[in-house]
Amino acid sequence: MPANAFNGQTEYGIGIGLRVPHYRHILERKPVVDWFEIISENFMVDGGRPLEVLDRILEQYQVVQHGVSMYFGSADKPDRAHLKKLKTLVRRTKTPWLSDHLCWGSVDGTYTHDLLPMPYTFASARRTAEKIRQIRDYLEVPICVENVSSYAEFHVSEMTEWEFLTEVVERADCGILLDVNNIYVSAQNHGFNPYDYLAGVPHHRVGQMHVAGHTRFEKYILDTHDHPVLDPVWKLYAHATKLCGVTATLLEWDDKIPSFDEVHHEALKANEFIAGAKAAKPARQP
Amino acid sequence: MSLRATGLKPPPPHAPRRLATTADVVKLQRLMTHILVRPLTKHDGLQPAWIDGRPMAEVAAEFIKPNDRLSAFDRLQLYNRMYWFRLLDIMHDDNPGLRAVLGPRRFVRLVEAYLAKYPSRSFTLRNLASRLGQFIREEPRWTAPHTALARAVVRFEWAQTVAFDGAQRPVPAPGALARTPPARLRLALQPYVTLLDLDYPVDEFVIAVKRRDALRTEASNAVDSTRRAAPAKHVRRPRRRRIYVAVHRLDHQLFYKRLERPAFLILQALAAGRPLAAAVTAGGRRVRPDQVREWFATWMQLGWLCKR
Image (cartoon, rainbow over all chains, first blue to last red; front, side, top):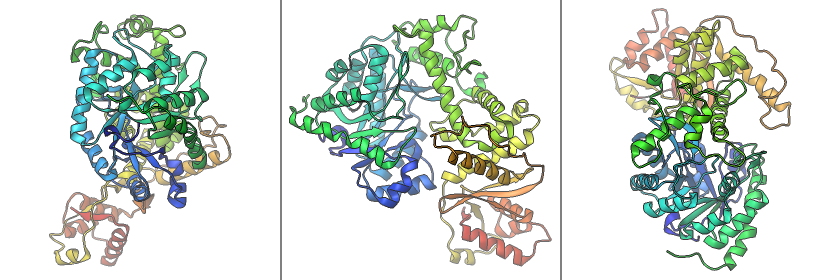
């Protein structure tokens, strides 16, 4: 999707995740990169090197915040201290939008530090959407929720994952960070057609996309972010960009991280599919 | 698992059959969390029996769907493993000194016991080891007979976390210092500076361990090879010797600075909020004025002192 309300009306192009092994390269060589995605939690600190690096990055680059611990789906209420720190960071980075996952991961104030799958029920969707609205109103920044990769499903679910995602974002009136690799991983693990997923989500709400590598085991696939993007995921990405339009896209590479140039080169492969997207019909409007 | 310590309330006897209310969601999330944070078996698997004695496979099947390749038990086991592998990795990386004191197996057993009693209560993994010192004090059996050394190392390694990203407050202007009488002048220590009185020279020990680990990493081309490489060359545990050290940062790099005891006492008194004149007397009668002047000049240069 080109610039829309869910990504702060910005057209960011292709970004990569800001990771520690690349700090020196980026700060010394100042490579041309459309934007960097930061993991918010790594910079929700009071001082020191993380903030010093961030400030130097902000002098040169556009930065978008991506979180891993907001847990929109947790039954716990949003933690005020957490939100306060996050808002301080939002003001520092001036992120045009903020993303986190459609998942849960904490209960009774105990954190698993995992992105756990949601039970896909209407009651869960209502509760989750309400929490997203509260958080967005407090942070005063557009929010995109990301679909997670998952390895388990609940008996209590009343709909498909993409129907649930749609239910949540429509109720919250927020954007989607469409993680194409996660769709692929979950499709393989749960036996659904990933193209049905793509067809089923509201394309006009997609404010950002993720691509990444995964690892195939005998009976399941894990979302490992330690490989180049595999061909079936690029194919899915190509289809997603045709449906949604040219969307801010980010390559995630979080483990066994190679050189900056290798990561950036992999990310820029997305350009091959963007031409096709530009030629396709514009995204469906609400 | 001590529920009082974790803050996690008891799991429901059964998974809810439908999620109509927030209370139902809480029940489901509590049950799954209790399962995921249970320590793994010897073979890194989900424990076969639940806390009420029922087979875990039966409990899992109540709320998790199987697929054509994995049972409900298998699927929960994936999450149980990921939970432990992720947290053990973090503790492994943040506590190289403690690992060297205990050896890899005892280190893992300690961390499992610690996280079973004190699972994370923070949104950030940065704070994962924040209660490790308290745990070792409460349950010394996991570190015996090296408990005193282990406690010293844990304090030292946590101080590094604080030094890495602790807040930095404004330093007082020299003019303001000169205008305030020493009997009324109250300074503070930067939040990122930790003063430690330790029974072992753990600064030297941790440096030796890190140097060894760095060499092991350089010796292999494999990424993340440190945990699977050949057995590490042993770094000898230090002998008991009292030291005073400040863990701090300068230009965003971590440093450890040994302190003389009187200097340590003066800094400790300043940190406790005592006025400058009173803090200096905390150093003892043998401290010479020229020594104090030199120490303060160094501390000001390092930026350790800040406004209260």
